[in-house]
Length: 476
Picture: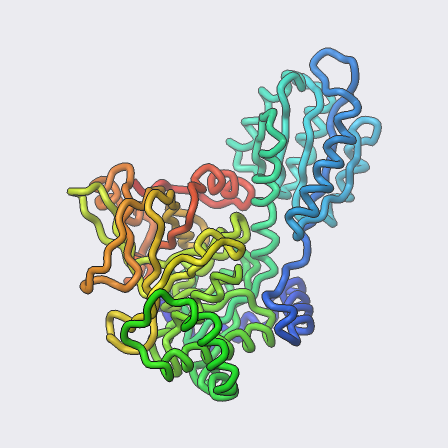
């Protein structure tokens, strides 16, 4: 299948589902001014259920703990801002058969295992809820009975369940954060300029909608040219001066007019995203007219949205997942290896400056030309030494290839793209031999690109894979 999607296929998914259309309408109506930027997703509804008897019984939790959990979840709901806990049934006294119909309004289920042993009523009730097929988390503390022995087979059978046997309530924060990803993906709209690139499945708007719920909105280059022209030079100059020129460590090659044109492109794309209710954009024309996309994609990343270069849909979807799960932007990379230093070297000309998230401090950056062409405007961002990173890519709509590393060197080699950093990995030689893990087929964008994120998210991605039903392969 061609990496370029024809317009007929795009138009064929115009009826992308009531949920996506409704969200698009809501966002488009709400984003009438800069005050409502960036757009917010509606809250994810998580149904909470308490399973088992409480109070003064061998291997059961104290009765008052349920109220403590409710207060904890209320605080978590307030902290996250995009989650709403519903339900709260106690089984018993409520029958699980009374609970099951109520799950239809939920995006996921959070079950608290309070007590129970093998073959008894609590275990049977939990099994019925897991079998509903919603993404489900089972939180089980020590001394909650011996029923935990029967939980692992659910995961081994491929059911969408994460088992969390832990005394640390803080683990709930992490797992609830992951429970947002699937529902948010299903309500996501992505602008795709001049068609996508990547694996065949990711380039199919119909398959993306069917597997993830995301809607791909086709945009022509001509539309971007017109939107660019519609932005006033005064607004573009103010944007360039305030966000880029005044904050740059150094401006090397680009002229002020080139920087204003790039800022103008950001404002144009922002307006298009607002009009169409989109939270992400990717462009296979990002190195062409009207301006290179580096400023645009960088600031979108800084704002907690997704801008992905070269039309790379696999990386776009990866960046959306990590953004929803961990609140960090991704750095699309053209990596190379150095086995002498056990290193995977990352470089590209587009990078967010708030790689630790929208509320983090901006990293130092220089404004440069784009390396390949030595034209336009690009960014050279200085990554922090010692930073642990996750390198990943969600491919074929069913597999996450992933590895971790630690930044140990930053270079400015003119043979590579502007932003460059070296990471120590577990086994560079093995990773080189295993690149793609035997699951990636396609052109350069599919085979080469990966996305790099601050933090070690290996375990969390394993948990996310169980909630969403995809495979994880460590690329090492």
